[in-house]
Image (cartoon, rainbow, N blue to C red; front, side):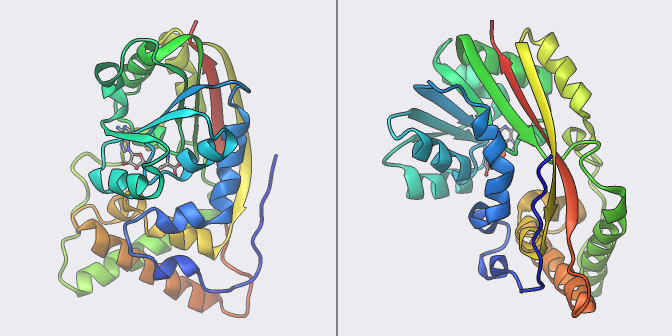
Length: 282
Ligand SMILES: C[S@@+](CC[C@H](N)C(=O)[O-])C[C@H]1O[C@@H](n2cnc3c(N)ncnc32)[C@H](O)[C@@H]1O
């Protein structure tokens, strides 16, 4: 178990970043801490790596730092994320539009030694289809590694009132501004309801072997929370009918109100578990 605790009530630098962006999260040291165990699961030799759901390249960058000679391809369905990744890392890696289930159509069979999905698998709706596609692009003996801090069991029960108040505050603010409050027709995304056991079962069904799973617990402070509030995933889950930038702004304001209430008292923190998987394609 690896607990990282941020103390102090300093306001978050992430608020200065444009909302609905992973930039604040990418710069957050707690986020790097979340990703280290994933990088530690990579095999020592990984000449060709596919970073699925690469976003703006937070983990792509770590992969390039780890091995500057790596042949790295990032894939993401979000064009703005890919533009950001290309702007930062485009001279050292290739970035391609697509989602996890499309990789078998985008790349030849056995094209990669390693496939990484960092902080992304919970956003992939068709897990079986995606794992099948990933299996096709992995070389025999190749490794798949992924992590998620959004699954059934990730949250601490003690934090549920804080999450509820964060969302309720953002929804109240939306209502005051006459913005729509509809819940998503699809409900809570399927990926957020998966358990660690669901991932294990899906890996086995897709034919992966040598599955290694670990879970770690992290305590995050207000800066990390603010960075998460600014991401489209969290904001659109709270306010699905509101455009994602406005949703992120309202959620960030709701967090600021929570922090103001806490001034001079115990700082706002949340505890989450993160699950990590490594599996081999036979
Ligand atoms: C939280 S970000 C993670 C970015 C990066 N991997 C990191 O760890 O910082 C999640 C990314 O998954 C992408 N994504 C969403 N649905 C996806 C899917 N079905 N297949 C692949 N990526 C997806 C999003 O566009 C977003 O860039």
